Length: 321
Image 1 (cartoon, one colour):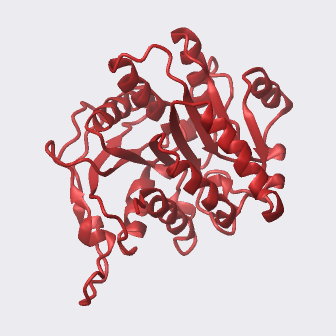
Image 2 (tube, rainbow, N blue to C red):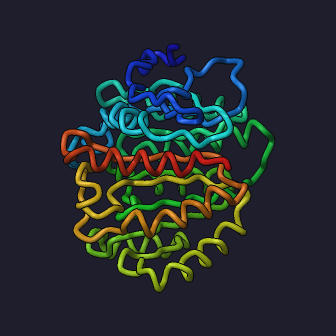
Image 3 (cartoon, rainbow, N blue to C red):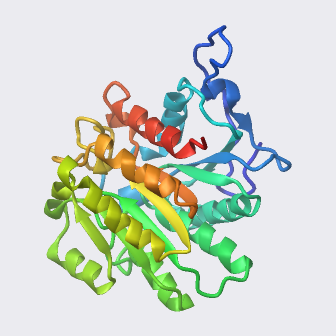
């Protein structure tokens, strides 16, 4: 199935979905259950790739994340199947060269259609420039649905704010400033939580901008088992104030030992073991409309550690039992 977008169309490649097959009953794995998305498909979890690292290149990072969607599919394919509902592969949106803005709009159009069809989209990045396209897709759907000032809560697990000034260049470091600017134009509230932030990787100017925008911040050093319940309660309070949730996960939030294959590996990071309980709370809130994963860079991965961690996250988000 081809994506309906001019310079960003790629064919659906189901050959990535391979793995072992066990003869016992109830022993299916993802590669046996996932289906190509069709226009008449019943609502389910829809995986959509975003093949782009143009934003990473503009942000002077390590390129290679455009190959992330394929690596993530390969890592997800052999995982055990525990869903009750269907899951679909919706293909990829590809950024051709430096045509980032075109690709982001193409992604937004695809996501708006998926959400309208009552699917739960999970976008497989790609650089974190994916975030602006993801948010645009949800915003487009809500606007088309007649919502005047929806309270979209953005929850970003990330070592970085990604609140750089887009007036210089739009990149993987600017998506949430772009979203804040778009909210201001529309008269919509801007609600943003950044969890796992590294103070060492963010300038004072970025902290000031976050304070001006009212961003909820929890730094990586706060993520300890003894503090996790407090963080969860703070997150619950944030979610209560939102009508819809958009979850975005930059894999550089994980320690370099867990996620070496990213643009900017974390010296400290937050372990997946501490993030998973929060992901479950977000998933089970009843408000999650869309999720994406960013910065998987197979060129720099070791033993597919980063791809496996990303696949584990998709597995967790897709659980519906």
